[in-house]
Image: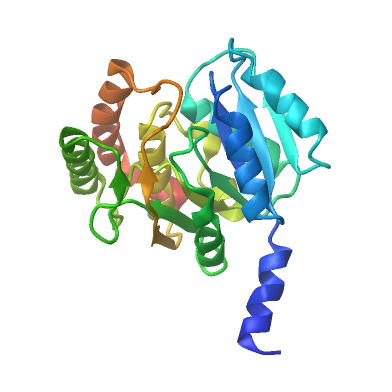
Length: 255
């Protein structure tokens, strides 16, 4: 069997699900799910909706009913943060024997066209991060101050937790199931955007292979950003906490 054919067989063996947390994404949910299913016929989607008052969950249910089993919906009773939504989605997917879980935003900032390269990289890596900063700066419709803030945040995170990643805060990423089973999801404390930082740190400390692939990030086209002062403050504090707990985490997570 040639290497190319062998890679193709392995690709089809890896059951992959895209986990999309939602809160008030009624304007975007049909667009993002239809795009994912169109460009990646072999993947499934799990929408994790936190009881959106704008009816996002109801729309997702209708889309699920018409998806021939490719789109699933997990309804949560309350909105308690991005991290908790992802962990609920990961637990759901792990219980149903998916091999790889991909994080993706619902706001169309993560282009489904990059799923192919992310999934392909996941054949040989444990964690794949869609990076905005691997080949320069690849963001669209961000003001300069937002770019500088993001670059500064990533530099701060890298210096504090010492992970060899260009884009520590990217929310477009793939985890193989053995990573999520090993890094202690029950012990993850981050809940906002620092969730991505803690997950990166735990995977690195545990010794898993992390690779980055370039993406182009597009600012959301509809709806409102979920960024808040509380989320920003958590993102400042979490790298410090992780650095202070590094030795204990290394003992806990060493494979």
